[in-house]
Length: 52
Image 1 (cartoon, rainbow, N blue to C red):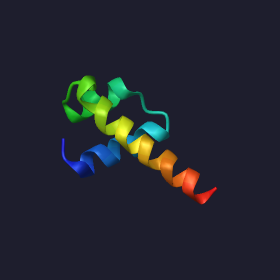
Image 2: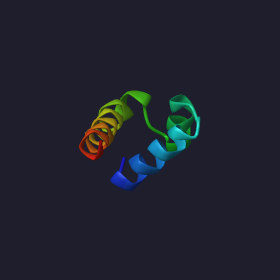
Image 3: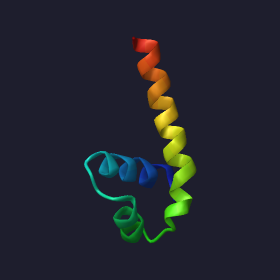
Image 4: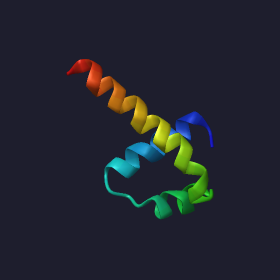
């Protein structure tokens, strides 16, 4: 997946679209989204902590 696709998927995930549906839509294994998703959430959490 390209970075833009990952970001789009994360945004859809935030609006309640299931990971399985996102993966089906993008034609990828749901396992391939685990690391990018975890990285993105970690970075978001770090930004929140810095802003607090």
